[in-house]
Length: 141
Ligand SMILES: [Zn+2]
Ligand SMILES: [Zn+2]
Image (cartoon, rainbow, N blue to C red; front, side):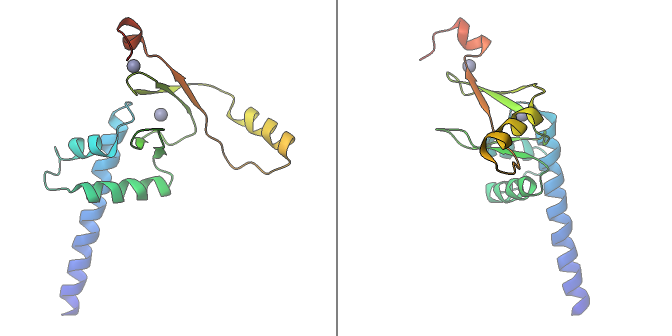
């Protein structure tokens, strides 16, 4: 009985680990900052029976561990980023596409904020808005 219980919990643990690994790998393959729905579509190629609930749960867990970033997008679903180190994003106001922007000022901006607020700064978010090259060519509704 005890042996059986151990086996069950080991299998569950193994499955969770495998699912989490697949989700992380899929997310790290792309730089499109996909939504949970899009990640669901990607992960199903490796694990056809995975559920959307499992996707959400694992994304939350990975984000809480600092392995991925969860991007709260105004007026749309959250997007996820396999690149966990601090970096900036630019969002297209027409199509909603999110792209990385390389900037070197992370520490500098936090130092300025600390000086002006007298807070100990533990992090910050900054999002740029613009019109992507594709949308510049077509009419933006
Ligand atoms: Zn666009
Ligand atoms: Zn990013």
